[in-house]
Length: 267
Image (cartoon, rainbow, N blue to C red; front, side, top):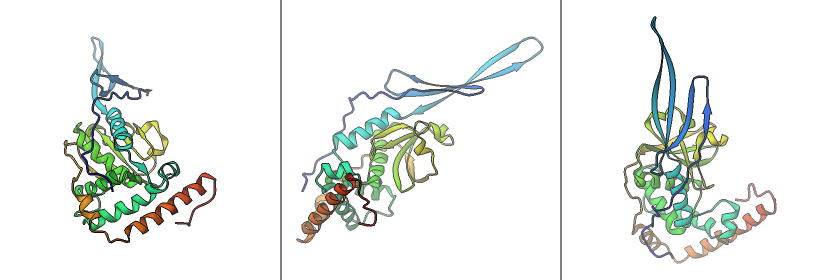
């Protein structure tokens, strides 16, 4: 059983954002570092105004924010500071000797026994599941997506955040309200595969997607201090046998997968 403790945030780490340029017929896109470790994206569109006297080029500037730096911070915090490992990725399961596989099942049971909240995607439900993942140091992409959403919300960076799903995968997103209708300029926050980048920089995230949760960054914390211990205390004495069996199963499946064997239908 893990000792209860408050998640530690490393706010001093400087994280560099990816830069890119993109040219269109009448637009120029560029990422500009504003000196405060926040990358601002400015869009300049030139329009021509014609009159009998002269021709005037007018510049219309719209500033959009990229949250790549904040996304990198969230991914780093979840994977490195909190030490959460995947329960359904080969390297994560092997690294933990199968315990991350068993811990995801246990964490989901504990969250369910705690009532989850008024809905699966409710803030309370997300906080309970994320707290169990934090305590057990294990998560699948669903829990990682929830933690990404909650970490970005807790950072209070402004703009909007959400949880997105596609092709059986879950991850977080962040965007300014101005670019809510231009997905390419949104920021992906995916701790499951340690990705933090603009959507346009990875073709995978440009596929069909479903927004399961959205909200505003508001600086609200998510860690529920006592709930893990309370739910663990309710388990009967046989829970450890089930957990150990799951850990062995997870390790064996990951070993077969590492060898290139087909494990579909085995769990």
